[in-house]
Length: 112
Length: 112
Image 1 (tube, each protein chain N blue to C red):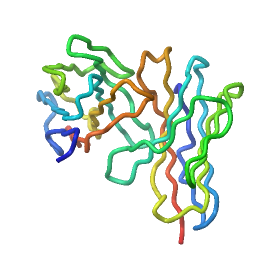
Image 2 (cartoon, rainbow over the protein chains, first blue to last red):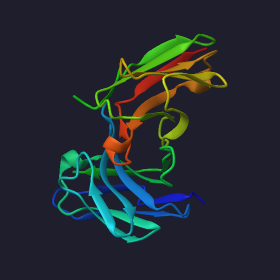
Image 3 (cartoon, rainbow over the protein chains, first blue to last red):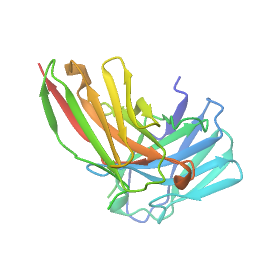
Image 4 (cartoon, rainbow over the protein chains, first blue to last red):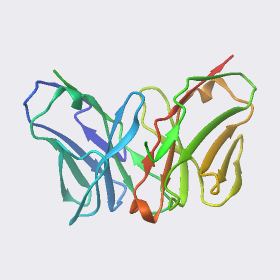
């Protein structure tokens, strides 16, 4: 089983719908991140959390919200999805060490 | 301007050649730099990190950092078709609050 698990792996939704992407990890790491990947733009940080009571905005947080339900769980919500939120979303964890991020397998979201 | 810039490529090299991947960064406060490899349809994985000026070698891979020029590079010697992937440069440090900022990624194709 993967150490960082994302659900769903693929989702197609319509404009205006609320969508939640979930991430759980078994690595025991305190730090969790949500990134978005678009062709030609690399990975862009949406939100990150260094512990259960800590939530921080990243480069592109508008239109997104997060919840850190437990050390092992970090979910990303789109309250009202729009087509330009169509992307590949990655959850990642780290132990705060030399910048090694452990990524989930990604969640591909399509907003029609 | 992104804080971390890469040429998106694609970069094509013949098998056995040296592949040179380059990255520049704008924040002089960035202290540590990372190279991630991402195969098509997969999540990124860390292959090298470097903190100090100069070269760092690991097998066929050499990372180079020049803080005065704000320049990071990754050399892959004896390139193999299995090295074909997108390579992501990332920078981090105290100014980034413990998070990584990624470049756009460079697509490398190694031709047999």
